[in-house]
Image (cartoon, rainbow, N blue to C red):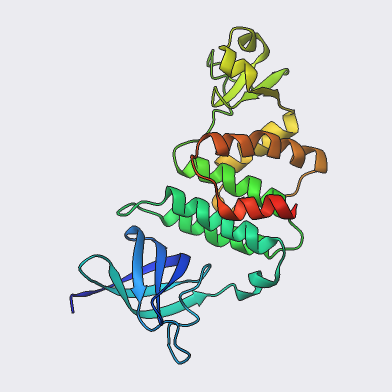
Length: 255
């Protein structure tokens, strides 16, 4: 057996392998996204049985095999088993794991994404916060953490600060805000994807991308602002990813 390593991580997905084993994908603080085999995890008396499921946070002790890691021991810090009973919250959760998996890479520092996932799953269990708002916050902050933050503080065309300005537009193609004058000079693609954005929606998006992570789920918005956030953020995420997320497709059917 090679040297053991211990990583702090979250289980993004788990798939059965053979009759008794599982293959899990972990997002870890120390080694980024990695996969590992949990031998015997599907046996009734396996110590891994409850620890190798999606949403499990913990410390995973591994050893390297020829083609992947193998699980040696797990110390679970959070199970979040109660999320399974929340509908449609659990599918939002699966979508968030899928999005984190999409952007995850081996050998990268995933501390921020791990913290974001932890706080987001907790938010899904908070009845005071609409799951749709949780989705908007997670999506936009994920784009920010992945270096895909839209420009929300200056006009993307002229570079002028937009504080105090009216007649502002969010353009998917331009990756941010255009003021009214610059919209007239925008390219056809930028103009076509531009949608007027209200001061309340703009402020909320600015808060999401810039606030401390622990403050992300500390507010609510009106139905009108929530609808507007969805109209801006969801197409932006779709335009910056090239995958059909299974959990998102299920959510769309449920909603």
